[in-house]
Image (cartoon, rainbow, N blue to C red):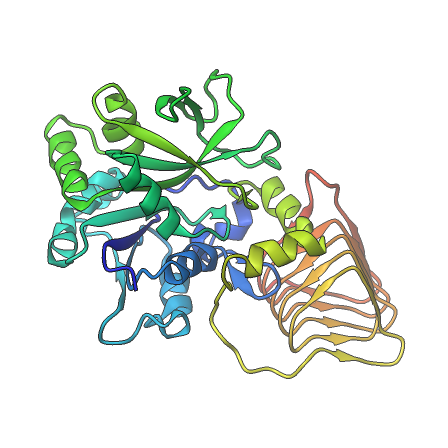
Length: 370
């Protein structure tokens, strides 16, 4: 157990361009990888790093978030020595919801003050990785940094949008820009920041007093010449998921065994909410190739290069290619889908032919019959 470090998963104003997939849920609970949600990766990395107290700063559309994480039992965060806290926004009116994360940190400052941990790691949910955060803390302490930001050298973002970072030869951050900036760098910020808890609280109060309310843009980027902000280079797999195209392309990456093994098992396993369901059932005529098939699926048709979540039914003569079908979806008899994303409980009627393209897959929202 890492008593020095407390975890914060910051969902305040997460960059989100997933359109229909986040119409009724927050980005953190978008289904991914046949049985997981995006937040599972950040939450599991914290737990595997020995962090026993984690706060999730919710923002909007967080009913599915509360249903998924619950008491934290599936991540072993429900014992007396540990805890998972869902901290909803404290807002008197809608204008308060538009304020930045520093405002919401200030509203919940008692959570930070009650913790005995000296350091805090602040992370987002749209950076999909499996990382040992205790190693980041060790590097932070060894180099005497004020703030350490986890970075990844990555030319191809698979269409995800990320903040760019530039380091000097000593590994100190000398420039940071949003994804639309002109900074020439192949380093991206993974939006994971380690710092002393007291420094965070000081940045919160100082920035708010100056009319600034965003942690990265105001409290960190404007103080690069005042604080020692170091970069920690991460070498594992990183998926940046905040657009429809990046969601589809990173999902398809999971069909590569080496990426699947690295993301879900190294350096530790990824945990999620457990649902007791029977194994997938393959009926006569059912065929699959290079696909992820979750528990409870019934396969009577053909599935190729696709990802099926729990309880999906592919009827006789149906063909699923290069597609993502979420929980309890159904493909009708003789139907064909290609480059399609189907949300929960979408039903495709018999004899339909639906096709999208790689960079613009067809999307059907949940509980819809097509």
